[in-house]
Image (cartoon, rainbow, N blue to C red):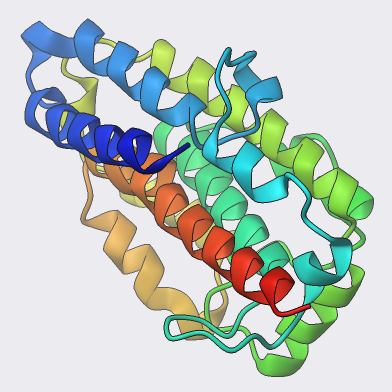
Length: 230
């Protein structure tokens, strides 16, 4: 995605924000979401005919760059692989459980074993030692495959929603399920409170779209800075 495509993505996100709560525009909102969402995952996820933001990130990305931690940047010291894992975990838990009341893709596909990690949480409030360990050990190919499965699941979940569903508040029982599943660290319990105050539209407009957009852009800047210096 070049600069003009990024600007268009932001403009479309504003449009989505304006129409998503209008039941009369439900199908338009779903279609616009799917258009926005496909640009945040590998083109393989949705067979996108154009290069996506993730495509831009992984193109010519050295594994050493992917794993480098800590990094020196104004807005993060976390590794690119952490950012990718973090946004995917949050998309999975919010879309699979909070929106769809179903099993997370991580659990249904036993992805933690494939990823070579024990952590099942969102990545918020991790210690430096924990981030360093994740950055060094997480399996890259499995992470990219997990992202594809999560992305496809999200698209199915949102496509099944009915007019008016975007207005629904997140159910307290589903938030409690995430707590039972240790989806966030105790130190990050604020995240559950934050999601608990959201509607389905709120989850679509942040965890499933803008949150990913922000972290991918941050990761691309890191890639450019690290690999330019080598």
